[in-house]
Image 1 (cartoon, rainbow, N blue to C red):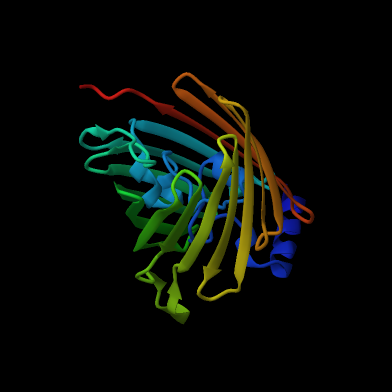
Image 2: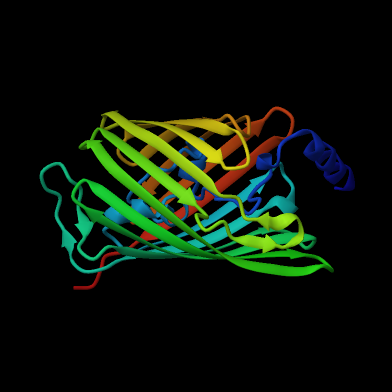
Length: 291
């Protein structure tokens, strides 16, 4: 284990920080999003929109809970664990005129996530809200972030994020945008250390009901922009096969999804030529609302 940690330390000097887990920045959650290269600004109707783009909560019509586990490069100190829940408010308006069904008063969501080990860890508590109005969805999220170093104490701050999605061509082409940490939250006075502010924008195109194509760009205000792409194919209504690529992390991803009743199981794996294998698993459960 010590040899492995030494290797990662040396690699950390050679590769940018975005190769390493959270880094206080926006974390794409849900194995579906990860398998699609984390091109998730346009994904809708699932509980992990609470982390990926709160606007995507707007088309969720059932109460849903989820759990997510992530391991990068087979190192336990780079593990991520998260749980999330989303609850539609009001009555569900039926789909009409090419627009999806949605809750009349929007959807609220919450997420708790933890990254790291004993030496360093991040804990994030997030609350989100998404609302659908015609062909447009809007959403926002508020995070309380705690960063802890062993023997050095902890720092806490609050970050606000906003997102939007719009159907350019109903049921075919969707545009999504998400701005994480728009208030540029400060972690420490030393060197004016702040939580990264990141803008993501992308397109989702459905040439058929079985195929979803994603393209997205991501820009940290202090770093170069990167590109992400994903492909999802449904050979059967309950089975999904996915692939993706992210240029910033130079990581190729792939995964599968399976729906069984009210449960959704998703698995993803990522490969980096220098750092090796990462694995991701998420399980979600939705239930019917009481009248």
